[in-house]
Image 1: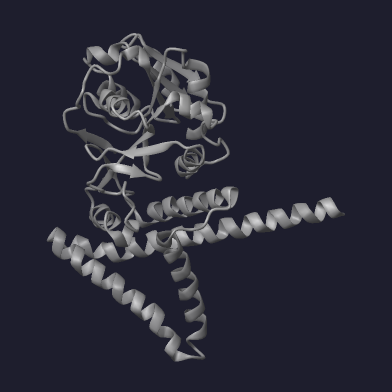
Image 2: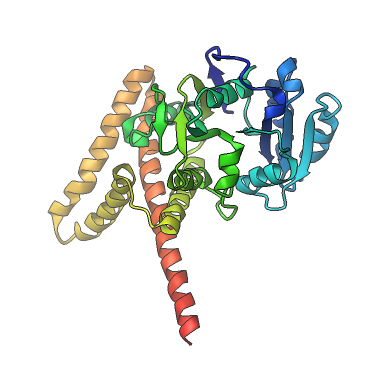
Length: 351
């Protein structure tokens, strides 16, 4: 379960509760929503007057009923329907239906998360102290309890696992092209049209790209950190990074963007592995590529085992292979399916 930690906010008093709208997408989160809201609001007098909106995407586990009951504890809490079900649609719906003319800041929270006291205020104060910032991002520090989780958490925060992405365990605050979304200036969010509701994944990076095109900037505040719990099984990690790859593919196609080097490497590596494995029966030297990759994975696993002082670290090799190749496969499948669909549409129009 993701958690956050932060150092004492500076320049308190720059935001009033009436300036802030908090949006929480929820779908079948009855087991976690109360903990989330208690951590965000609790006994914090400041948060008692902040409008917190739970956007329910049609939960079947009593999430909506729980949120309605919690309004007795937290009068400023609001519950709305999210017909679009996706998180992107939930945030947009919350802004469209619940933001008042006086709201200046939007804070995006996760119903599956537990936040420390002062989180919302820290996010908005950080935005308020930087007039040039259209959005605020926070670093994510991966963690886990089980063997596979611990190894995956260690490797994902290394350059091998994240490609050096600033919001993956980064320690320096600064301007970034993209990061884990924590908050926005509402005028900027509205100006670019909010999230693209057709995106189930990578909606944050797609929005950050449009912000950049419009002249907006994203500030990464390394003092406000999100502790992120890794997927518990190899299969779950595979599905996660497959979806990440497909989402990035959609963003690249929509905006005709160029891949960054850290995004090109897993795609090129996957294609190289497939090609050399097919060629190796005819050209044995081709097996050097997969052999070198397997060696790199083994070295990463050994280093992780030493760092964790546990044989659990040996899972870092398989976890790294899953991260690279699931992302690359998802990206390639998205490109192929999009090109196929486009060609089919062209043929139908010409028929």
